[in-house]
Length: 547
Image 1 (cartoon, helix red, strand yellow):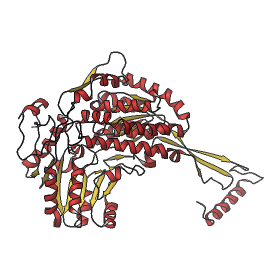
Image 2: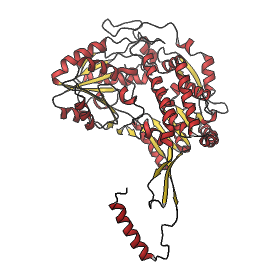
Image 3: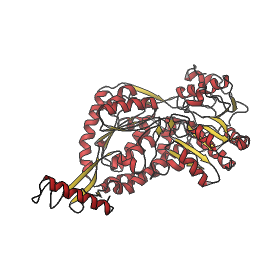
């Protein structure tokens, strides 16, 4: 099926519902067209920096395959204009007290919760995900807004540091904004990975030029409007859209710091361009995440957790699980529970709560998912459930799929599928499970299930991933917004959330004030006498346990 067009996928078997396939969720009364009218699209598109008579690109609603929006595309010249406007606005913004900047985030938090139905419609319309999974995005953004709205002053305050000479040297570490952040955000979580990453940048005193993925630009533009309503100066957040290989490099070329979420391949290119200019970058990239079900796990809870871990947003989540490592002694029972839960998931595209899983975002994602499954089956893997597209529901729907008997030569074993597909592997010892989990160049997220929490934390310490969830899929670590989140290895550089999530958008500046005497020969001391005095002083400071 990977060589079929989107239209062909939608019409290959019109109306055919597999007798033993996943059930369809009840449909909602509203359509994408009524929820995202042309007037809303035009209003939001006005926030794009695109001058002259720009070319227009159309986006498609994944749930139906219908046209969603026609958006103006920016040019590299527009990117330059966007940075100019942002730089002018940034100076005045940075001069405001942190408390004033933080107040914008707290007002945004309240507005977001109050008007959540508007943005949930947009997220569903642009990504095709189930409404509950769209709500997870909103939840993450609201938590980040609250956290940085309350904690930013503490993160950014001046800190007294030990001076060169006790009493005589007064040293302070201050935090200054980078300037204008270049932020390139993906399509899969258009609210969280757009505005969620920008909130700490703004409260730290920066401006932003943001290039969202064109397919999901409306969600970010809506969030921009809401932040402006909350008090953010309009020019402080510039939005440019267009072809990634054209507009992305232009953003990196002008930025004082780059924040990127996307594929590992593109992340390497972004890092190289940023390094050539000697500007910093944070990169959250791909993953091939593993969930470990130990012999003492609560299997009912683990099976329910695995469904969340593998099939949220139809698997189009960087921290979702694509490898299930299960102790051999409990594998049969676990799979019985897990497959039954997976087979019962309700698929649907209504703009309402009720569906357990939505659609893939595009024919490209459908092609990759189909190829990985079909090639694995041809090479000997077994489909325990799923393994097929569902054109009766929409053009890009694919059933949640569990594969057994996957071997290393199969693409689905090592490549990131980014779809609703998980492979099952059995292990005999804890050492074997840890080695298997770590046998990938990626290192983003992992999950461990056990009744013994001390054992779970001990296993977590041996896993080479930026986040580990014990007895949860991914939400426990990701939702702990005071703690850092990011990847190791090919999964990226830097961290979002916590202190690292805001300090990455700042420059550390040390201001040292010297009093009474210089750090140089003085008071009649010659060079040799000065060296002797300083040598004695260093010995005394060590003896007194000065740091």
